[in-house]
Image (tube, rainbow, N blue to C red; front, side):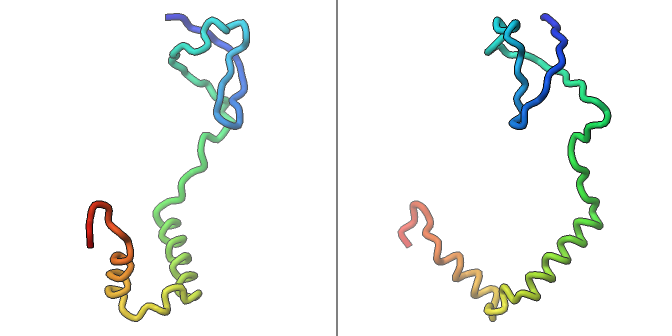
Length: 93
């Protein structure tokens, strides 16, 4: 196993290009260890549970206020009708 150290930039598509002088390695499998500067955030932090609940409550309130499902009198009947409209592969009904 060989170890190579070099500095490069990760492309916007996530690609890492080896310089031309490493052309003999192109197409080969490799294991990588990436050392990233500390000032770079790896991923945005996920909202905590309370924030997710708050966001969900706000979204549901917006749907209710818009009257998106106001035309549905009986949710069970509506759901059965929605299912019945889809054809099932391999079924003749």
